[in-house]
Each structure stands twice: as C-alpha cells, then as structure tokens.
Amino acid sequence: MNKIMYLLNYVGDGGSEKYVLDLIQSMDPECCILVYSTPGPFLHRFEALNIPIYQIEMKHPFDIKTAWKLKEIIAKEQVDIVHAQFLRENYIAILAKLLGASIRVIWTYHVDVPMSLPLKWCNNIFTRYNDTIICISQFMKQQLLQKGVQKDKLKIIYNGLEDPYLNNLPSVHKPMKIAVIGRLSEEKGQPFLIHGLQKLKTKYPSLQWHCNIIGDGPLKTPLEDLVTSLQLNDSVSLLGFRDDIIKEYSAHDIIVIPSKNEGLSYVAIEAIAMKKPVIATNIGGLPEVIVPNQSGISIPYGDVEQLATALATLLQDDKLYYSLAECGREYYLQHFTFSKMIEEVKHIYRIPSSC
Image 1 (cartoon, helix red, strand yellow):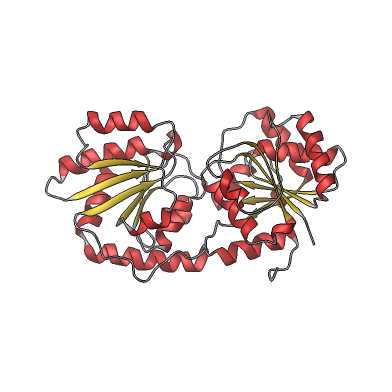
Image 2 (cartoon, rainbow, N blue to C red):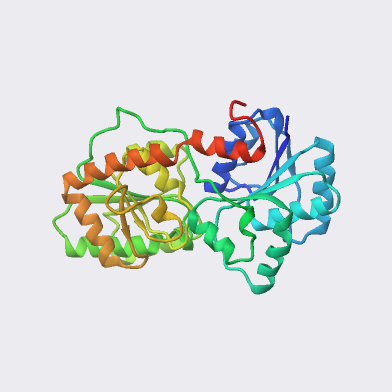
C-alpha cells in the first residue's frame, strides 16, 4: 500500500490545513505522515490523528539542507508519495527526489501568488518532476499556465467537504445575522466589508441587522479601530477564532466573502452546503462556487455600493433569500462533496477509492 507524506510549511488554521486534515482522515492512518516547519493552531488536530509527525525547518524553496533531511525521513518511513501544499514545499520535495529519493511528488496549488520571471523559469524546470499538480479551480489552472507550468501536469479537483447540513437548522433570525468567516488578513478583504456595512447603514437606515466577523489574524486591531471610527460598534462585532465553525453557520443568515485574493473558498462551499445565501467577490475561483442568481450573489471587489445593495436585497427579499439557499445547496451536492474530491485524489495517488 502506498505511503503518503504530507508536506506543510506552516500548520495554520486555514483551508489548506483543513484540506490536508480531511485527506489524512480519509486514508488509513498507518499510511500517512506529516512533515511541517512552523507550528500553528491546527497542530493539535494533526497530533490527535496518531500519525508520525516530523518538524524540519524549511527556509526557502531551494533549501538543499532541508531536502537532504527530507530524503532521510522518506527512506526511514518508506514513503512512496510526497503531497506538497505550497511552492516552497513542492520545490524541496523535488530537490529530495533529485537527490535520490524514490518518490512521486504531487503539489496542490491552493493560493495564487505573484511570481517573478526567474521563478516562472524555475517552475518550467522543476515541475517537470511533479507527477501531478492539483488545481483547486479552473482559475488556478489558468494562473499556473501563465507561471511556466506544463499543461499536461495540471488536474482540476475542486475542494470538497463532508455534508454539514442539519435538517433542524433554525429559522431566519430577527434581526438577521450577517457573518464573514476567515483569517483577518489583507487578502480576505474585511475592511471592504466594513465600509460596505457603513454604506448599508447609511443608505438603508430602517433595516435591522448585525454582522459578526469571525476569525483571528494580523488585522484584528486595525479592524476594531475601523469599526469604531465608522461608528459601527452597535452593528458589528469581532468574535475572534471559533473552533466549531459549523455552529457559526447555523447561528447566521447571510455569509459574505469579501476577498481580494481567493483560490477556492472553503467558506463558500460550507455556506452553500448549509443553505446559507452567500455574497462573494468575483475574485479568483469564487465565481466557480458562487454562481450569480444560482448559488449566491457576485460583486466586484471594492464596490461598496454593490455590496450594500446586495445585502439590502437579501435582508428584504424573502423569495430570493430562500431560492438562493435551496439552489446553493443543490450546487454543493452536484460539485463539492467530499466523496467526489476523495475519489479524484485517490485516483491520482493510484489508491482504490474503496480504501
């Protein structure tokens, strides 16, 4: 049976870490290994899986010293496949292969990042040694094609998740509750959301609502200051990190994804699976989940007027609200189930889907 090493630089609390957790939990634990560089909030979840875990420093993509260490672990654990999650880990795994490790290297491209011309040239050389590169959206595939990666290496596999839906979800809250869920960081676009909420309050003063910002990160203090400066303290709360995120979907009525950079959002998939109408920016892979007037409402990033209008529409139009909830749920069942994702990943691993 194939032995798989999952390679992560940072064990954070985002979608990439959830992706790896889900993959490991779907496999035989005796066939899985985690190698990471920097500990983070999800490390305890990996430790609870009772799999071998190694910590090695990964300074940069061309870290030969780390590649030698990785090669030693690969030999010790008799690893067949290394599944890297970001460019740094992918390059280090390929270096280990070039140093003699007998492995297949798979890379999942989670987050689109700018790349210099020299790095694109390196992609053209290094990724020839990848067995497969998984793109989590059509958008991500197109980005990699522009970054020097060979087309025949690319395979689109959408993120999937176990069905979280509960038939006993509570009815719509009064006043309605809006949520934005995710790391408080520049690419997630929370300042844009807050400005949109100010516009909503100014333009539609009679509407009753409350917005909770769920998550933690470097923008926490600036966001708190922005809420105060815009006099939104009575309408907007920062709740911090929440471990039971499915419970938060149940407690809210509308989910907003104001991202300025997004590969394929787990939040979007979770929300439509939970029958929650979504307003999302038309950035990255988001339009592949949030299809206008089918699974949600799509808006341009930075357009506070359109964001306020979309929120006002969902707050007032019950027919549209419930239509988006039902259609979004159906879209999840068609495209983003966990079983569909796992079957496709196991096919790349060359593991029978029954395993």
